[in-house]
Length: 260
Image 1 (spheres, helix red, strand yellow):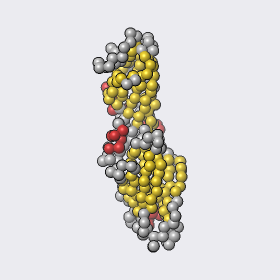
Image 2: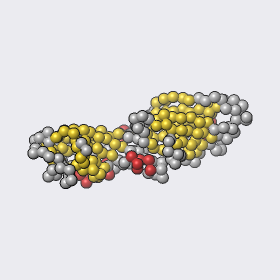
Image 3: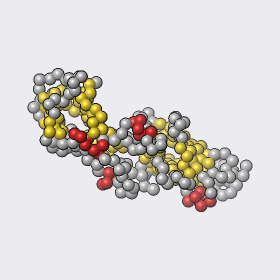
Image 4: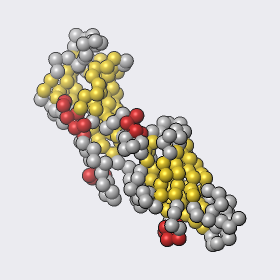
């Protein structure tokens, strides 16, 4: 199965409506001069994705936030409510515009804990007095996804087979098996330092399960393929790891004799 990354972009679009001031009532940004910013959200997944259905995200539901330093200008506003507006802001540097399809917590709690794709982007910029500025924010997949498949040999030989996966949060432990592995995807928030995925494969006839780990990095799509190598009496399991359609590594344990 070909893995793909899914990217959304925020691209410029002229606006017509303007705010009186790009600030909030609690934390005004002092300045006697102003400039203008404008932005737009465009969903390009229909173009980027060729082998599987798009995420089905509606950019009008994206939450857009604008801040300057530690001060929030506005946050959590639906893009559909402010699309096409030109925003007048106090001239200053240090502004940051962000857009996201969902928050980090929701990215792991949605769909009964299996999670969902999180698309996020941010852009830092300055507002120049007397100038109009189009802010472009490139939004891409922010979390990592994990899919599991089993070799044709396993599917044709065993009536039951499964892989359990979890990270440092045991309550988010998922079992992929004959009934659900082709329809289930698990999503994980992965920081810059990475995150370890623990895998346990159970196959009939194998006295002990096969265990391995995958060191995930941010914004990647992982496909884990479980295989059995050898013949009766000298069989071993292996885990092939595809990352965004590129075979990253192939882990082979010591042979496991299923009849011991």
